[in-house]
Length: 259
Image (cartoon, rainbow, N blue to C red; front, side, top):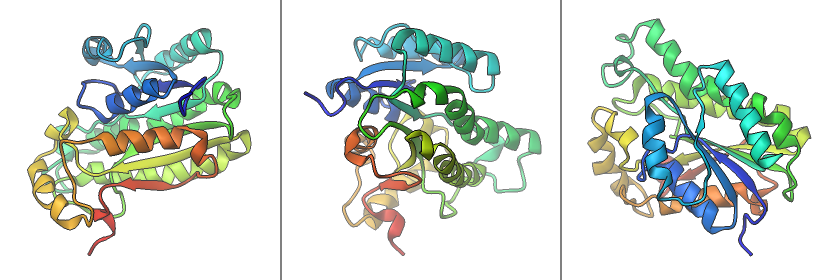
């Protein structure tokens, strides 16, 4: 019996097989979970393609977090498939190019607001919409929500407004945990070190992270290996961490704590 046997989990943001969401989905399946995955917009075709590498995840759920109608439709589809939800993984983030790499005075408010809606506000939108299904969780300790994060406590070169969005995501996670805790729903941030993914390629100067992270991290860091992140995701989704909520769990080799 796996750690997630009888767990029903929705994982968003599975775009390519190098994504953190894909790694978590793969490990959840290995641990006995029943998994559904979602994609959005033009990325749905990529999600369908990569789903074949995961196996039995059913039809892809279209979920554009900027569309209240699609969110509502996704809730209905998950309810029809699963009847309840024991886990939800938020792996959604986007910022227009003006928000990255040019400093804090380049992006117009319209671009910043787009980044905020997709990268931060969407967590509240999804938890609020799926709350009735999460309340029905039959897992020991209740349901678990994970939001994929990148250390929001510091200002990193070139990360600019996306760093602000991650700081907001961490704060939002604490407020959501406070609100839904009485429903036996826990909310945690999973702050991974830099991993070489498609999303990472959109960050100007990402190589600077790659070059220095392993030197700063006491445990070292391999930008090509996301297995520790996936394993931690499984732990957070499982009853093993049923007493943990409102927390930022760092999986970065310890680099975030070094001077």
